[in-house]
Length: 306
Image (cartoon, rainbow, N blue to C red; front, side, top):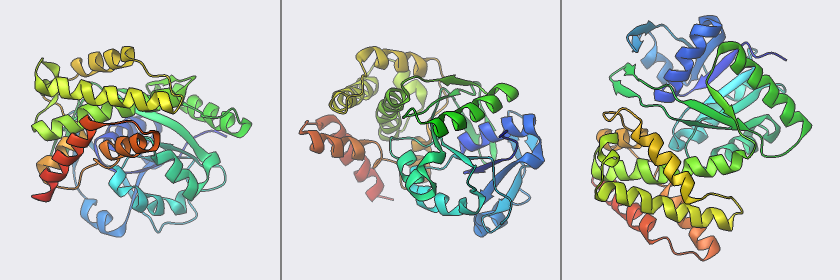
């Protein structure tokens, strides 16, 4: 099997960054954004510029049938995952491969339960620094995906190899992970620190790139994830914190993660999949998580005023 047709659900920053890249490489007819009828009406005819280049994306309805995708990319927020699963259902065939760019450590399991675990390849997106203004998006770093399989199952290996062939053919930036679960938890650790702290401090990456209470809170929140990962037999160390802090320090200071945009637009954030998940694992293992408890409470207080 060769991946030619790609369906993406989610027109946020990640969806637009990777969607525009793949459209340039595979052609407009082979890269589509799938959405419900309401969004289709709202987005049809909307001009989008990415790094100054105009894109006329192919938009299709969730009701379209008999046109399955070779690859489905989930690029929605966790709060929209349930709806997204139903939106792409008509695009799934027995041979379809699925990757999720969602934050957190639970989306692959949710998608797999609904659409087929054998179809899902673990993927982590990191290192991008988008800035959105209306329907326009600019970035200096596209980032990359880390990809791998959680179990040495032949069918999973074949699907992984199919995705890698497409990545190599198009020049899509990626790194193959031998221990993808360790990388998934590492990215989760990053999000727990960065995304939540910037929402609380109402800042951009510059806020945590310099010494101060925001940077300290970010690192302390990340350290609680290390403790929980050890309980799950995931080997994360403080060297991983150092790696991710250096990654954040390399990003455009004016950029910000999606959770900060949630705060700006006063919409429900992903706190449940970040601090909320930390608290659940803390209870599971009997490990105190006071930093993330405080973060959780502070963000809930912010959201209560919307």
